[in-house]
Image (cartoon, rainbow, N blue to C red):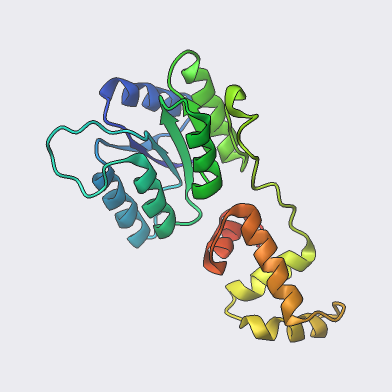
Length: 221
Protein backbone atom coordinates (compact mmCIF):
# COMPACT_ATOMS: atom_id res chain seq x y z
CA UNK A 1 0.00 0.00 0.00
CA UNK A 2 1.06 3.59 -0.55
CA UNK A 3 2.92 5.51 2.14
CA UNK A 4 2.99 9.04 0.70
CA UNK A 5 -0.11 10.49 -0.98
CA UNK A 6 -0.81 14.02 -2.21
CA UNK A 7 -4.40 15.28 -2.59
CA UNK A 8 -5.11 18.25 -4.87
CA UNK A 9 -8.70 19.29 -4.22
CA UNK A 10 -10.28 22.72 -3.67
CA UNK A 11 -13.43 21.56 -1.86
CA UNK A 12 -12.80 20.86 1.81
CA UNK A 13 -15.69 18.39 2.19
CA UNK A 14 -14.28 16.24 -0.60
CA UNK A 15 -10.80 16.47 0.90
CA UNK A 16 -12.12 15.17 4.23
CA UNK A 17 -13.82 12.25 2.49
CA UNK A 18 -10.64 11.30 0.65
CA UNK A 19 -8.58 11.57 3.83
CA UNK A 20 -11.00 9.28 5.65
CA UNK A 21 -10.65 6.69 2.88
CA UNK A 22 -6.85 6.89 3.14
CA UNK A 23 -7.04 6.46 6.91
CA UNK A 24 -9.28 3.42 6.53
CA UNK A 25 -6.66 1.92 4.19
CA UNK A 26 -3.91 2.49 6.73
CA UNK A 27 -2.26 5.35 4.84
CA UNK A 28 -1.04 7.71 7.53
CA UNK A 29 1.04 10.20 5.53
CA UNK A 30 -1.09 12.31 3.21
CA UNK A 31 -0.64 15.91 2.16
CA UNK A 32 -3.38 18.25 0.99
CA UNK A 33 -3.36 21.35 -1.21
CA UNK A 34 -6.06 23.60 -2.65
CA UNK A 35 -4.12 24.74 -5.73
CA UNK A 36 -2.32 22.99 -8.59
CA UNK A 37 0.73 25.25 -8.21
CA UNK A 38 1.07 24.14 -4.59
CA UNK A 39 0.74 20.51 -5.68
CA UNK A 40 3.66 20.89 -8.09
CA UNK A 41 5.72 22.58 -5.37
CA UNK A 42 5.13 19.64 -3.04
CA UNK A 43 5.97 17.14 -5.78
CA UNK A 44 9.20 18.95 -6.67
CA UNK A 45 10.26 19.24 -3.04
CA UNK A 46 9.64 15.57 -2.29
CA UNK A 47 11.44 14.61 -5.50
CA UNK A 48 14.48 16.74 -4.60
CA UNK A 49 14.57 15.23 -1.10
CA UNK A 50 14.50 11.74 -2.65
CA UNK A 51 11.26 11.04 -0.77
CA UNK A 52 8.86 11.08 -3.72
CA UNK A 53 5.09 11.21 -3.52
CA UNK A 54 3.76 7.78 -4.55
CA UNK A 55 0.16 8.67 -5.45
CA UNK A 56 -1.41 11.92 -6.63
CA UNK A 57 -5.18 12.19 -6.21
CA UNK A 58 -6.48 15.22 -8.08
CA UNK A 59 -9.64 16.83 -9.35
CA UNK A 60 -9.77 18.15 -12.92
CA UNK A 61 -11.56 21.44 -12.24
CA UNK A 62 -10.50 24.04 -9.67
CA UNK A 63 -12.64 27.07 -8.85
CA UNK A 64 -11.20 30.51 -9.64
CA UNK A 65 -11.07 32.40 -6.33
CA UNK A 66 -9.09 35.33 -7.67
CA UNK A 67 -5.66 34.03 -6.66
CA UNK A 68 -3.42 33.98 -9.71
CA UNK A 69 -2.16 30.49 -10.57
CA UNK A 70 0.23 29.25 -13.24
CA UNK A 71 -1.55 25.87 -13.44
CA UNK A 72 -5.33 26.18 -13.35
CA UNK A 73 -6.57 22.66 -14.11
CA UNK A 74 -5.92 19.08 -13.12
CA UNK A 75 -5.01 17.94 -16.62
CA UNK A 76 -2.09 20.35 -16.78
CA UNK A 77 -1.07 19.36 -13.27
CA UNK A 78 -0.98 15.69 -14.24
CA UNK A 79 1.10 16.43 -17.33
CA UNK A 80 3.71 18.39 -15.38
CA UNK A 81 3.72 15.86 -12.55
CA UNK A 82 4.35 13.02 -15.01
CA UNK A 83 7.12 14.98 -16.71
CA UNK A 84 8.80 15.42 -13.33
CA UNK A 85 8.13 11.91 -12.02
CA UNK A 86 7.17 9.46 -14.80
CA UNK A 87 6.45 6.57 -12.43
CA UNK A 88 4.04 8.63 -10.30
CA UNK A 89 0.66 6.95 -9.86
CA UNK A 90 -2.29 9.27 -10.59
CA UNK A 91 -5.92 8.87 -9.56
CA UNK A 92 -8.40 11.42 -10.90
CA UNK A 93 -11.38 12.10 -8.60
CA UNK A 94 -13.75 14.32 -10.56
CA UNK A 95 -17.36 15.06 -11.47
CA UNK A 96 -16.39 14.80 -15.15
CA UNK A 97 -18.74 12.40 -16.97
CA UNK A 98 -17.71 12.76 -20.62
CA UNK A 99 -16.35 9.35 -21.74
CA UNK A 100 -14.15 11.00 -24.38
CA UNK A 101 -12.44 13.17 -21.77
CA UNK A 102 -11.88 10.21 -19.47
CA UNK A 103 -10.57 8.06 -22.32
CA UNK A 104 -8.11 10.81 -23.20
CA UNK A 105 -6.79 10.90 -19.64
CA UNK A 106 -5.97 7.19 -19.78
CA UNK A 107 -4.56 7.19 -23.29
CA UNK A 108 -2.68 10.51 -23.39
CA UNK A 109 -1.66 11.02 -19.76
CA UNK A 110 -1.48 7.36 -18.66
CA UNK A 111 -3.45 7.94 -15.46
CA UNK A 112 -3.90 4.90 -13.24
CA UNK A 113 -7.51 5.39 -12.25
CA UNK A 114 -10.61 7.54 -12.50
CA UNK A 115 -13.40 7.85 -9.93
CA UNK A 116 -16.51 9.86 -10.70
CA UNK A 117 -17.83 11.96 -7.83
CA UNK A 118 -21.36 11.05 -6.86
CA UNK A 119 -23.26 7.99 -5.74
CA UNK A 120 -20.97 5.19 -4.49
CA UNK A 121 -17.86 7.29 -4.96
CA UNK A 122 -16.51 6.31 -1.51
CA UNK A 123 -16.63 2.63 -2.48
CA UNK A 124 -15.05 3.30 -5.87
CA UNK A 125 -12.34 5.46 -4.30
CA UNK A 126 -11.44 2.72 -1.83
CA UNK A 127 -11.33 0.08 -4.58
CA UNK A 128 -9.38 2.33 -6.93
CA UNK A 129 -6.60 3.03 -4.44
CA UNK A 130 -6.23 -0.67 -3.63
CA UNK A 131 -6.10 -1.63 -7.30
CA UNK A 132 -3.61 1.07 -8.19
CA UNK A 133 -1.39 0.01 -5.29
CA UNK A 134 -1.48 -3.46 -6.85
CA UNK A 135 -0.26 -1.99 -10.17
CA UNK A 136 -3.68 -2.29 -11.82
CA UNK A 137 -5.85 0.26 -13.57
CA UNK A 138 -9.21 1.33 -12.16
CA UNK A 139 -11.94 2.36 -14.59
CA UNK A 140 -15.54 2.76 -13.35
CA UNK A 141 -17.91 0.22 -14.85
CA UNK A 142 -19.90 2.80 -16.82
CA UNK A 143 -16.78 4.03 -18.66
CA UNK A 144 -15.11 0.71 -19.41
CA UNK A 145 -16.58 0.27 -22.91
CA UNK A 146 -15.08 3.59 -24.02
CA UNK A 147 -11.69 3.35 -22.31
CA UNK A 148 -9.07 1.25 -24.04
CA UNK A 149 -7.25 -0.73 -21.38
CA UNK A 150 -3.52 -0.10 -21.36
CA UNK A 151 -0.50 -1.25 -19.39
CA UNK A 152 -1.31 -4.89 -20.18
CA UNK A 153 2.11 -5.61 -21.64
CA UNK A 154 3.79 -8.78 -20.33
CA UNK A 155 7.53 -8.32 -19.90
CA UNK A 156 9.69 -11.32 -20.82
CA UNK A 157 13.36 -12.00 -20.03
CA UNK A 158 14.47 -10.36 -23.28
CA UNK A 159 12.67 -7.14 -22.34
CA UNK A 160 14.07 -7.01 -18.81
CA UNK A 161 17.64 -7.56 -20.04
CA UNK A 162 17.36 -4.68 -22.51
CA UNK A 163 15.77 -2.29 -20.02
CA UNK A 164 18.19 -3.30 -17.24
CA UNK A 165 21.16 -2.54 -19.48
CA UNK A 166 19.73 0.86 -20.37
CA UNK A 167 19.22 1.55 -16.67
CA UNK A 168 22.88 0.69 -16.04
CA UNK A 169 23.95 3.22 -18.66
CA UNK A 170 24.73 0.84 -21.51
CA UNK A 171 24.45 2.58 -24.87
CA UNK A 172 21.60 1.29 -27.02
CA UNK A 173 23.94 0.37 -29.87
CA UNK A 174 26.03 -1.80 -27.50
CA UNK A 175 23.11 -3.91 -26.29
CA UNK A 176 23.07 -6.39 -29.25
CA UNK A 177 26.70 -7.30 -28.50
CA UNK A 178 25.90 -7.72 -24.81
CA UNK A 179 23.00 -10.02 -25.68
CA UNK A 180 25.26 -12.06 -27.93
CA UNK A 181 27.83 -12.48 -25.15
CA UNK A 182 25.02 -13.64 -22.83
CA UNK A 183 24.20 -16.43 -25.25
CA UNK A 184 21.03 -14.85 -26.55
CA UNK A 185 20.24 -15.53 -30.19
CA UNK A 186 21.67 -13.03 -32.63
CA UNK A 187 19.83 -9.74 -32.26
CA UNK A 188 20.21 -6.60 -34.36
CA UNK A 189 20.07 -3.01 -33.14
CA UNK A 190 16.92 -2.59 -35.21
CA UNK A 191 15.13 -5.41 -33.39
CA UNK A 192 16.11 -3.99 -29.99
CA UNK A 193 14.81 -0.57 -31.00
CA UNK A 194 11.57 -2.07 -32.30
CA UNK A 195 11.02 -3.95 -29.04
CA UNK A 196 11.59 -0.81 -26.98
CA UNK A 197 9.23 1.19 -29.17
CA UNK A 198 6.58 -1.52 -28.82
CA UNK A 199 6.79 -1.40 -25.02
CA UNK A 200 6.77 2.40 -24.89
CA UNK A 201 3.75 2.51 -27.17
CA UNK A 202 1.88 0.08 -24.91
CA UNK A 203 2.44 2.42 -21.95
CA UNK A 204 2.23 5.73 -23.84
CA UNK A 205 5.81 6.59 -22.86
CA UNK A 206 7.83 8.88 -25.10
CA UNK A 207 11.30 8.26 -23.68
CA UNK A 208 13.43 5.36 -22.46
CA UNK A 209 13.86 7.23 -19.17
CA UNK A 210 10.11 7.01 -18.51
CA UNK A 211 10.15 3.28 -19.24
CA UNK A 212 13.14 2.70 -16.95
CA UNK A 213 11.52 4.66 -14.13
CA UNK A 214 8.28 2.70 -14.54
CA UNK A 215 10.09 -0.66 -14.43
CA UNK A 216 12.16 0.33 -11.40
CA UNK A 217 9.09 1.55 -9.54
CA UNK A 218 7.31 -1.75 -10.14
CA UNK A 219 10.43 -3.86 -9.52
CA UNK A 220 10.34 -5.28 -13.06
CA UNK A 221 14.07 -4.61 -13.14
